[in-house]
Structure formats: structure tokens, C-alpha cells
Amino acid sequence: MAEYKAPVQDMQFVLTEVFQADQLWASMAATQEVTPDLVHAILEEGARICENELFPINRSGDEEGCQWNDGVVTTPAGFKEAYSTYAESGWVGLGGDPEFGGQGMPKMLTVMFEEMVYAANTSFALYPALSAGASLCLLNHASDELKQTYLPALYEGRWTGSMCLTEPHCGTDLGIMKTKAVPNEDGSYQISGTKIFITGGEHDLAENIVHLVLAKLPDAPAGSRGISLFVVPKFLVNDDGSLGERNPVHCGSIEHKMGIKASSTCVMNFDGAQGWLVGEPNRGLAAMFTMMNYERLSIGLQGIGLGEVSYQSARTYARERLQSRSPAGAQQPEQVADPIIVHPDVRRMLLTQRAYNEGGRAFAAYVGMQLDMAKGHPDEAVRAKAEGLVALLTPVAKAYFTDRGLDVTVLGQQVFGGHGYVREWGMEQFVRDARIAQIYEGTNGIQALDLMGRKVAANGGEWVRSFSEEVNEFIESQTGLEAYTQPLADALARLNEATDAVLAQVKEDPNAIGAASCDYLNLFGLTAYAYMWAKMAAAAQGQSGDFYQAKLQVAQFFMQRLLPESQGYLAKVLAGSESLMGLPDDAF
Image (cartoon, rainbow, N blue to C red; front, side, top):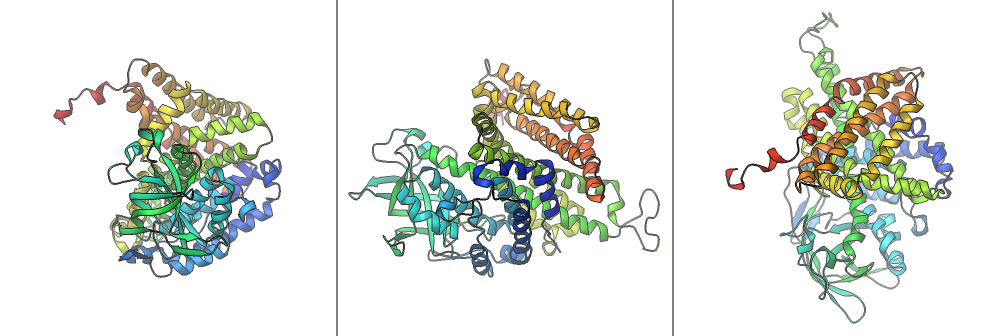
């Protein structure tokens, strides 16, 4: 059977020893009260609720799934009770603004908790994740009146949020959406249209659902410049904060999916529903990107979390499953065979899982650190640099975390052999649940285009140079770590060469960005993980104990067995677009 224990020790190692997060938080006014003791308590309690409340209903939730009946969506047995416990314990508002009832915890910490939730129960995790993203969007763009109306209840978990973008005829190309918003005399709007693939659009977990809906005003400009954002509650809210009549927004059906079956994925019909403008007219897409970017990092954590629970289950199985003898001779002669963990190929799979999981966890903390500094660092130059890195790294985190997350869950399934393909062991569910993360919140191909086009080519590689300078400073500051810093330096040189090559190609080839984007993102992700592993090796070097020795061993594995793939990615980037675009369309 699958098993999960939250990797609290590793999370604390990353926060405290690799990034000295307590020192950073002490330097910023909003986080000065976040002490190591508080962090330890939050991680331990987070582990408890994930292990004891959420993980036990993960498989049953997958088997039962959500049920739709005449517009009413029912979540699987145990979900409503678990959500009540989760919300009453304050987890929904963990990173929320204290002015409206949130707890104000830094992003570096909340990414660790989110990973736990995704590992324990990915379907469940999506409900509070959408609420947190909707809250962030409202906090940054809504009027004070809308904030006061919606944020406290969202942070409490009494209400949940949803993000309504996609329509049957448009996904990535939102500029051609058909949902309309017609002004009412009282300043509100009538919202009409159909949205699809709406996570948490309808369910029975909370008393109200707050939909953030993209729509077009009657006089809106064509394309994406004519999109506005509206808040549309399932139940209207009275002046005293109580719930009023039902708004005409209903769930027409739910999708029957490959995975995340306990997450309601809804078709939502808005039939003249009353909504209120968030932000400025025709500036809705820019406002919605606040939520989308939050969700992109969150979905990246889905990949890490599922990779972690898959690894833990595969590790235990490999220690117990007896098959054949070790190539070096019998390791357990008293048994009929040795455990499969003695075989090189099984160790290759387990080490690959662990290297990607722990590298991803560190990189998630690093991105969280940039978000924390961009928001609250007292030095304006530090804030500006962090903002640039957040923009650069968000598509890398979303795509690379989730691509490797699927790879890692497949490896975990492979360790189990035929048992991994059988439902009762749980490994096939992790593969199915991981697969969607590469698709929603912007497919990973779109993330790669965003990285290569908007975050690299558009500014001539400025943000990449900022990242490269930081990594070089780290390399130059280290002594006695050449086994880790030299491979990192080599990978960084490849990343810089690839950046310069594409910037040169794009001057003459309009297909250069699209041709290079996915391979460039993979090269960037590998290099970023190498940076994380070198930093973890620096923190572990000279320390005693099995934990630190294992860190150094896994770091060595990453540098020697995984990082060399960066050479292949560079070669593909340098190849340009000719072999991709030369075949006529009708020859496919």
C-alpha cells in the first residue's frame, strides 16, 4: 500500500540551513514574528493533518469521485469533514493578509505546507488552492468594499474560490471569449456565458463559492485587451455579510477524468448572474494573472508532492520485495533472495526520484524567497531584482516541477513492476493525478513559450543575466566543493550559450522562440536544480549524521547522472527551427 510521511526534516533543512530563512524574515517588517519555533510548529501540525486527515481519504476519494445530480455536486465520503477540520484549523488563510483575517505566513513556508497537501491528497488540495489564489487576486485588485465582503470568509474557509477563464471554443486564446458582462443601473453587471474546466466550480464543502470570471463589456476592444474581471458569488451577499438569494450561476455537468477524480471539474453556466467589476474595465486579464501565477507555482508543487509520496512508497517496497541476488553476491543469505533495492537499476530509479524531489523542494523555497523579498524587503534594489526573478522563474517552476513530477511517479510505478499497474497499491493513481499538472494553468508548452518569449527574448536576456550573476557569485564564494560547483558552472555556461544563441536566431527566424522553448526550459530547470543541489551540498558539507551524508551522496548522483542531460538540451536549442518547420503541413 502507498504510504506518506511529510518530509519535515528536509523542509526545515532547506529553510533554515540552506537559505537561512529566519534571518531574511527577521529583516522584513511583515515577517519579523516568524520564528524557527513557529515554523517548526506549523510544519509539524501541517504534517499531522496531512498524514492523518487527508491521506487516508485519498484512495477512497479517487475510487468514489465527485457525483453530479441536477446541478448539485457531492464530494466523496470524508471530504466534507476533512475540509471542515482543515478550515477550522486556519490552513486556508495561512498566507493571507492579516488585515482581513489571514495569518500572513511567508511564501517560503507556505510552499512547504502546500507540497504536503498535494502529496497527501491532490484532489483535496485543489479546493483551498483555488481559494488562496482568488483571495490574492482580490487583495491586489478589488475595491476595499469587495475585499471586506469576500476576503475574511475566504480566509476562514467558509467560502471557497474558483477561476473561470476557459470556454468551449477558447483556452489559451482568451481574446476570443464570448462571455458577456452588461452593466446594471446599480453598478453591478449581468454575466452571461459558459465556462468549462472550472476546478471547484461547484461542490458541497463550503456555504458559498466565489467565482472570478473573465468577460467582455458591450463596448470592449477586440482581443485580450477587451477582457474584464468580475466577482460572481454563488449566493449573493447581504449588507450584513449574511447569504442572500441564489445567483443564476449553475453547474451544467462535471468532467469524467483520468485523474484528480475527487476534484470537481465543472461546466459553469452564467445566466445573467450578478457580478461586480474587479479592477479597471478591460484590464481583467492583467488582474487575473495575479491569480494565475499563484496557481502556476501551486500546481508545480503538485508535481513535487506526488513525486514525494511516490518515492516514499517505492522506497519501502524496494526494501521489502525479494527478487534475485545482488550482482555483488547475496546480501541477505538467510532469505530466498535479496531485496530489489540492491540492484543498480532499482537504485537508479529511486535516486532519480529523490534527486528531482529534493531539488524541486529547494527550488520551490527559492522561488518563494523571491516572492517574499519582492513583497517586503526594505531595500528597493533587492525588491526589483526579486520581482524580475519571480517573473523569470514562475514558468520554469510550473513546467519543470510538473514534467519531473510525472517522470518521478512513473519511476515509482516502475519500481513496483506489475504491482505498480494494479490499483490496490496506489502507484497508478499518482501517475494519473500527476498527468493533469502538465496541462492545466497553462500547458507546459505555453509556459516554455512564456519563458523564452516574454521573460528572455523580450528583455534581451536581462533577467537571465541577473540569475547567472547570482549563481556565479555563489560558485566563486565556495572552496572545497568543486565536485558540485564545477558541474554547476558547466551547466550555467550552457544555459548562457543557449540564451545568446536564441537571441541571435530570433532576429532572422520568427520560429526560433517556439522551436527552442521547451528544450530551453528543460536546460534552465536542470541548471536551477544544479544550483539548488550545490547549495544543499554546501550546507551539508562538514556536518555529521546520516541525513547530511545522504544529501552529499544524492547531490553527487544528480551532478554525475542527471545534469549531463543539459548537453543534449543545448544541442537541440542550437539546432534551430529548420528540422521542425521544414515538413509541409499536408505531409504529416
